Length: 140
Length: 140
DNA sequence: TATTGTTATACTCTATAACTATA
DNA sequence: TATAGTTATAGAGTATAACAATA
Image (cartoon, rainbow over all chains, first blue to last red; front, side):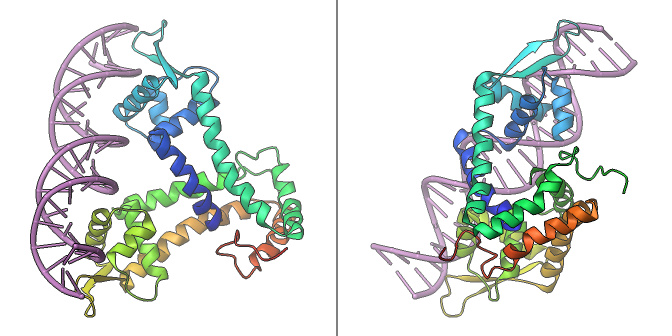
């Protein structure tokens, strides 16, 4: 775990650095990419654990780089709807690929026997219906 | 992996926040904790990917909190030897425990069968003689 | 002259507080 | 009066550049 965290982190952060985006902006991009609809700045701030000003400025940067759009909500003109653009989705996908690359290299470096054993060990967990929240476990 | 990274990260960062230490200072503490002897500021900066001033200031904070000591190298008085103190080692151990707690909770939430399969899958990898650098693989 | 470390300065990202617009 | 968002200001943490001490 420790090795994977540091190894995959290294090139990931390098990529983030190259993009000239802050970590908050990356997280926001992820959040926007997973959401189907535009999100309010307040909601983004809450989900990212940021202050509203920090979220607002992070959005500024994303909009300026063409990775997101910010439009007024017609139903409540105090709110803005922030959405990811196609370019934003592309950028995010590239970053995820960087993360996975590190893990793939690790798996690739294993002996075939080790790799097979690991796959067998992970299979039941991956097959769970609540993979995204494994600690919400079913009755024992 | 993604779940573990975010789940273990949350309480870890909370603990870091409570300690009033920067992330660089935590990394430095880890580095110092693993080293047997005192390290020069330049070496710390290189290993952490920090500039020398940033490393120097990070050391300042650790010394001020009694987590590290900084003494002049008698052989080359340009260099300082930075070492972790007993209190520093204790602080670092507490943080590691926080990290492991998240993973333990995850493993604990698994079905016994899932847990056993995972253990079996990881065993050969853990048994390697180069666990700390798994990508340096032996001849196939 | 080269190297280690520190100080000076500027930039980024953050939060709190003050402000604007809408409800 | 309350809420969403932005702008103003201040505080970390970082890097580059300038400097001091030692080799």
